Length: 429
Image (cartoon, rainbow, N blue to C red; front, side, top):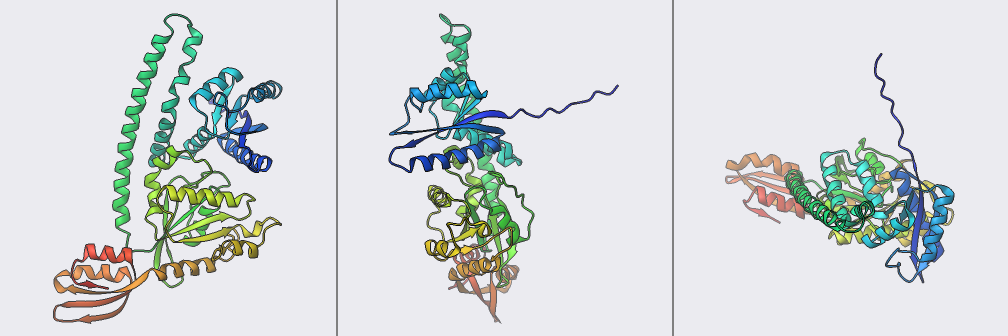
């Protein structure tokens, strides 16, 4: 008789979502928005939010984030609804974690831990797995102490502290060593990617940025006729995807899709994904994709802008893309959106609405950055002539005694610098 391996589905955890909002803000409306997003995060991580709580405070309670009354209310909900997981929308301190788990006797996670878990589920390539592991370890390191509280419960009294403290310090050393190892590996990946980007630096480059699930990957496929993975889920794309496409003026260009941003994105993830986000830093133009059908899209725009600022990209040229216009809420109209975002391009990537207008806008952005160069290539360096032709539009050629003189139009500053490095002979603006 053959052995039969039965696959059992992982049971869905019943979760309680908790948000603490600051007094003086749009208290109830804000809390609902935050809890909706936290519930969506939980769903993507494999849990089901069966109850929600929110509290208005001047600031989170130092010991438990919420007040004593809310802790008792949470206990009742846990007992009544069989809740096994309590999720907090804000990042918890190690002390808050310890106190809450002691009081509630169930697993407690904060928003950062949930996001890290989703990233771990989505990671497919070796680089993404390295980046996620590094972020997880950096998040876990200051919280290791709470993971050893079971020692005092198990033994108690004299002798309980010694083994526990020794184990904590041992684990911290191991974690720090692994963090250093991962950083070295990612540095090597970053150097390799830098060399790859140098080889294509003569082409105009666009980077898609935006809140997670805004439709960036769908737009990438439409523009580049590609097949990047698309799903109605958070962080479907972790690795940067670069595609070549032809602009309406016939010029070749590159467009890249990167990891989506989200409110309160853990700082560890931003640091770990620096090689992926390098595609954003080195782009000529950013396409900020906005889910215009989302009622909270304005806050999402602010989150993306803040994240771009944190990685030094706030000064880059931006084309705002108002996506999903076929699903606008009744309170919004294309006219009011364009009044709020002058120069933005309304599209529907899934329905192929207004894509030609968007492509024309990309050409206009690049043309503003272009100029003309005159290049004299000695006959001894004629191997460089193919590079010159590929760099832009050759509008004039003259073969003289000293070599071939080319006048190349549609050259960006970045491409001009690239030509100067490869052909350090008589290049003039």
